[in-house]
Length: 136
Image (cartoon, rainbow, N blue to C red; front, side, top):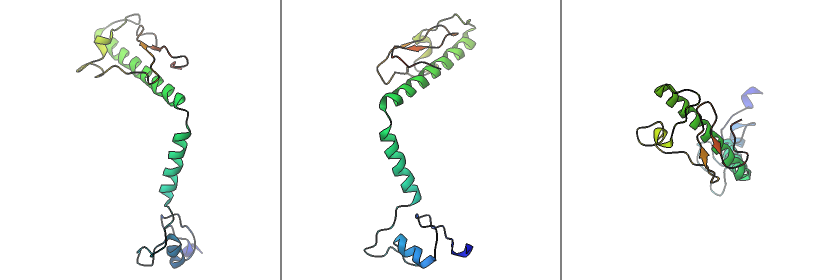
């Protein structure tokens, strides 16, 4: 029984080798059978599923998650700035101290929903003007 189980990597999993090859659209020499379309591979099926799922996701949720990740990155950069400058939790860095060539980040992150970021003090998370775009 175990000898009849063959993983072809083409979406065909069980049965005799020759039958499986025909089902997959190839002959015993792994040549495509004329007029026979091979089944999509398991990887193709997964890729198609993920593409479908990605298009079904609400763009507002994606933008919110990107924004929250930007806010987290800004907070990490502020803490690095604090460690480098010896400032306290109430110190507020400026954009010019954090963002630019040779600084903590080459460019200031931008909210994909067109919100505006406020850096705030090091001990406080940065904020976005879009409702719900908050670091948990």
